[in-house]
Length: 436
Image 1 (cartoon, helix red, strand yellow):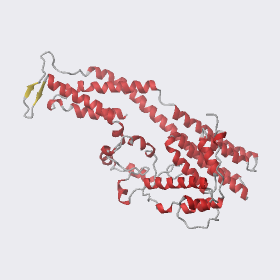
Image 2: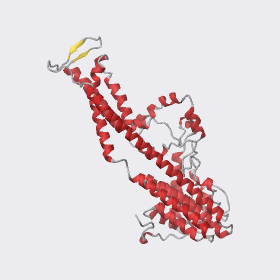
Image 3: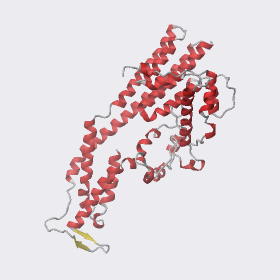
Image 4: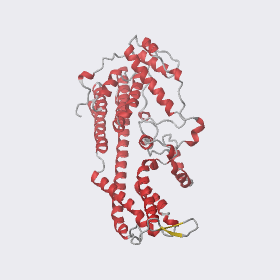
């Protein structure tokens, strides 16, 4: 939408709490003992704006998170008294803080289970038979291929072969492909069973018997391998196209996100360099840094969808608690039709308030403009999938190929008992081809 701000009727009538009151609330929620009149903590340096794992602003749970103490969550009455009796605003802040504590408790990993945690994003291995239906979808946000030093050492280890084999049972791919693989594997079971009924079968002593529904006109329910040999090159080309396109989209998206991180750092770095050190401009630098962090989180929220709204709101209210953003700005940003552009516009508005040389202001504005371009590029990738003509053709081609493949394997694996080797062969082939 072209409207980067909230509708006029949606503007909340939330009063702005006193900064010292917000600071006192933040101190209470953290369980700290400090004076409520203490000044707000300074915003981080540009190198500290992003989270440490690969420059990703998205909060990544620590591998050994400790569940918070529920007693540290303030009650609405105490918060209301500190905010001058504003019950509505106090209740909203209290709910956000309570949700943050609940989310932290859910992410906490018991100390005795640390050895079972993966090296990326605190991922815990779960056997595929214990994985829920939506496991593959809910784990997407935690399966970011971002390596740090320990990850590279582990990846180069000579033990990775055995580690990868041992983790097959907990692979999310199995859960994602469970329906497809089960369907084509049942087709292989049907081919073996129908041939036992219509042709012949062997008992456990190896003695052959005529099938219960044997017919002299039916030699076997099978197909020659030649049609599959002819179709294999075409299927290979489609699979290669799918793999190359998928990697190209991933690589472009990772490059764009890296550009976003770099330009966000540049905005904060330029503000720290160009803005004077008087109290007014120090406040503007802190506000610009907060709006930059809010922008990148809002873009992450757009890419992840409505399920990330609560996380975004709690993160924005953390900036409110630090005294660098008002609750009204948070609510307007959450109500905006394009949240990333709302915070980019807020960054430009903050820049206009700075009394600096026009050339320096133009350099900061150029960095903000690059953020606008990168935001549009991320939206393009998100909204433009691989052409459905190719994906649907490949899906139908591969499904038909694997459904009929047991008919060709039946004769080729005739040395096995009752041709039962067709079933595991079909299972493995379908797993790897569907995985591609």
